[in-house]
Image (tube, rainbow, N blue to C red; front, top):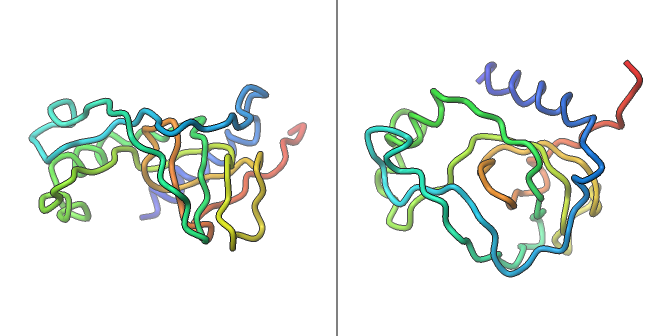
Length: 149
């Protein structure tokens, strides 16, 4: 867990210099994501690009346009194999998302979300290998404004 938090912290620092092109764009009805239909021996055996339907946000959710994805080879191997913390992937009938964490820009917010607005830069955990990801607002971290340091 400390490694994940450190990785996320470093991702947030790097995101404080998000490129101007990272501003959110209108999301269509689908987006591309790297997903696994089932577990397998290696990441490359299960990873597939899929067109995923954009679901309606719950009142406490935020849609994030992914700009940077964290890459953790060990974590993704465990996820792909359904090992350790990812054992539930073995029982998944519909497959599972890939990518442990990332940084992006808020593209839309649920009706009850407070403290975030479209265009805010944020860090998130989960589904980083996608054009968009949905997260509970309480699980996001705001990226501070860039500084000269």
